[in-house]
Image (cartoon, rainbow, N blue to C red; front, side):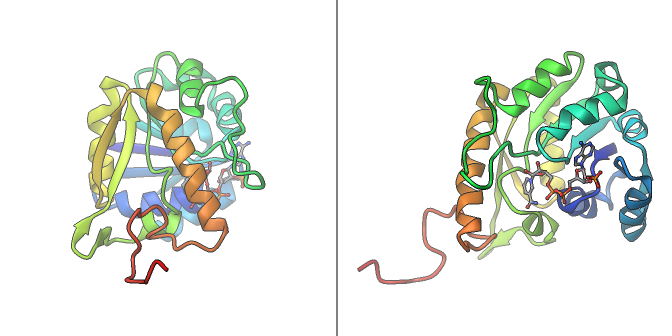
Length: 214
Ligand SMILES: NC(=O)c1ccc[n+]([C@@H]2O[C@H](COP(=O)([O-])OP(=O)(O)OC[C@H]3O[C@@H](n4cnc5c(N)ncnc54)[C@H](OP(=O)(O)O)[C@@H]3O)[C@@H](O)[C@H]2O)c1
């Protein structure tokens, strides 16, 4: 499928690097030179935010959280996303307090869905660090990494496919009314990572190594 990615940072490059074998990808951003440089290293296309929104059957928002709404404007507004699958990977989390930056009671994903009434929206890839997504091997002791996600019914199949294509097992939590749980879970992940946690095992409820409890 054709995937337009808005952003050319850590997450944009990590996901593009895993999808590139099976899909056509365009990276994009405000700075066309930086977008082109990031795209060159993966041998994929680059363009403006509006071009990436036009290119993708799937459009991935890989900007910082509030920047999503700037990016929608830069793409030409909601009509640029009509009938597209839109994937929100962002975490609206303050990295000083590790609390949500949302103030209206909606998850960022629901706010995006409200701003893009013609699009089919989902959230995924927010709960692990970019280096985990970039890693070609997502198995641990031979067991697959599971990626929880939320999606409108019409976006479900594409999200599940794109999760499988990075080498992980999709786990649908439900529609985007469940996305706030992904954002809250990511806040725990980010808090533990900032305290020195390991990117690959951060939210394991079983310790990765044998260690006496007392
Ligand atoms: N890094 C991770 O491990 C990780 C893991 C899971 C989820 N996430 C989430 O993924 C998102 C991206 O993280 P990242 O680490 O990839 O960030 P990053 O490396 O800093 O890249 C951010 C991208 O967003 C663009 N951007 C920022 N403000 C913008 C605006 N107003 N309009 C258009 N583009 C704008 C930046 O381009 P400019 O050069 O134009 O600023 C850059 O291309 C964040 O929301 C984060 O919470 C990150």
